[in-house]
Image 1: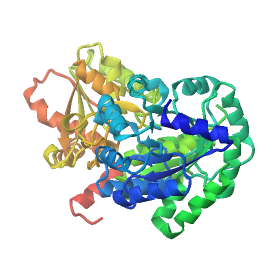
Image 2: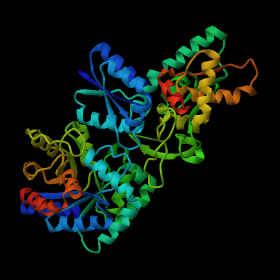
Image 3: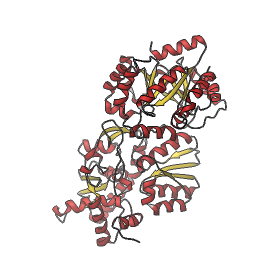
Length: 258
Length: 293
């Protein structure tokens, strides 16, 4: 059982939901990223999602696009992020999911990437522009290395797609709360609940929800419907604009995710 | 489809004008994404699109050119997919766009065959087209793939391959996965996409439609490039000698003709795809030459 699966299982036993904060590697510097990850853990995060910057982040809204640009300007790359994680592992064992676009992985070489990511202590990988249909070799390599593959579902996903993503996913399934990009406005009209119930018909794997969760109140509603809440843009924005309030904000999210 | 809105990306503005025209005709809402760099150098087409009732949205991020406009259009589509159709302007993007756009553009080759048979009574010896994303080129070549004709695609050599300021994916790129397809890509060692440069916005793009590398690797089509300088010379040459002002994109194909045609005999036939007209480029060329209009 992977670290991520174990985390979800233990939470379930306690009747709790996962809090999954996101940070872009290199924000505001690689060293500070490490400190913020420790802060995440102190504030009760269960899993951390770590972003790798890319020049063309198609699934991301303006907040994470800009974070990506800043990180690239600081010279942060996938090759640099993996040793950083290895170093981080000396101080924390919190399950870590890497979020990267596919081309950096392709250029790195799938086989080398899977091996080096696992060696560094990465637990799972999210590649938003790699659908399971195209992920045959990546899934195979990841299974061998016990690296979790997290695939995405959206409100527009068909039954066929739900089945395929559920089969291909390990660790958890990432449900995108809205049609759109990260940092969009969340619409809480009851459709989230029914979509997740629909997915549960086909799988008992944990479902975490991301894209657009910003306020602790939203996090509360989303956590009731799912197994975990991913908060990205809202955290990235605070790290960049008002880092002093970050700890308090993380605590308030943790408080409401149950 | 029941969709009331269309979106498109545009580099040179030609595709944007075409989509805006169609949308105006049938009464669809239309939004066109365009990099801020391209908005500056293709002001005429921006005005045209707005005249046709389209909303032109500036994309001020990344390299501020075609690739960024495609990113933004894909983000819009992800958000509004239930009400919106994305009319992608080149043989790129996720399947089935490369195939769809090729089939639509193949009308160019079909017309070429009919016209050259009428005019000369035989098929040409050479077919030449410029290649950005590569839709006009595939559109011309596709009809003739099995004819054994020498086909040449001309990429943007910009300021020269050695300067790094170009959009020659074959001469300067390697295989990558970008915007939903696997093809040649201008990228760094970390898999990040490099900025491009070309005097022609329609060719100023980091990747190339995936069917092009396939046809190149099978030896069906040859690829080369023309620099900005060679292109502007060809642009002026055609204007002076034939009274046709070509688009800067198409002038890349003409530059290749200027280079190799002196070696041919008078009997050989070359077809060049003049894929766009140059009115849109007149101001920009004047600016490059330091002429105030």
